[in-house]
Image 1 (tube, rainbow, N blue to C red):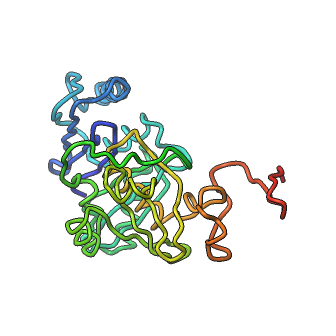
Image 2: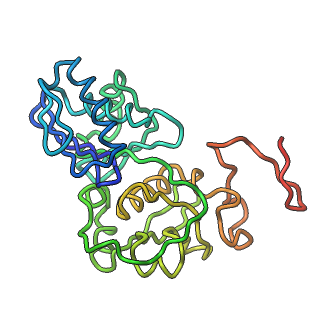
Image 3: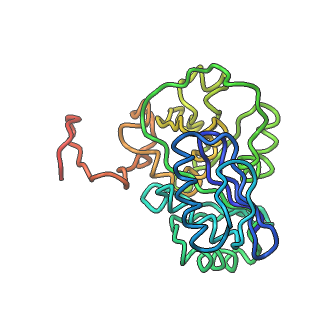
Length: 270
């Protein structure tokens, strides 16, 4: 595998393979919270003899395989929890997703996914489910930017063409098969809709957001989750307007306590 991207506020923690036994970690302008995460990472790295000194910005060479280094950071960032997805893209363009993040088991499940796809993984990205509901997208540009490498790496050929044409792309739900138009929050399209995900089949909006990462990586999380764990986002209360949704296509939220609904619209704990 060539690279593993873990989105952050400034862009991403970028782990890139440097041979089989070394990894380059690149971090740009980390926030205070990210600096704290890096301090914890380098404390572990020093103990494992991956580095001889701590450095929290720029490019750092680690004496560790990419999978082990990336898993350590994912663990520190609390990505060993429900609502987190890691996607691997293979040479044949196929994308496989897993919810497993474990420093010891990671190389094993990566190999398992590679065997399943019968190809070597090119890149991986770890994303968290966005917060459901508000706020609305402002529609105001956050500065000119090209597509983040991490988003581009996980888009398929058709999505790349759409992105280059209009800075948006189509993703298909793994459960409903519905087509979703995904436009980053700093685009005019998202500004008009107020959200980044729009179901083209039912003509409904999905309510979710993650302002802790750049617009492109917020869009990436929506893409990967809709394509592999659609029921994390297409849930009761977050499909608008819900009455337009096709019967049986709105799901109970699997990451929160189960609620039952009465015909009056009231919510009762089951």
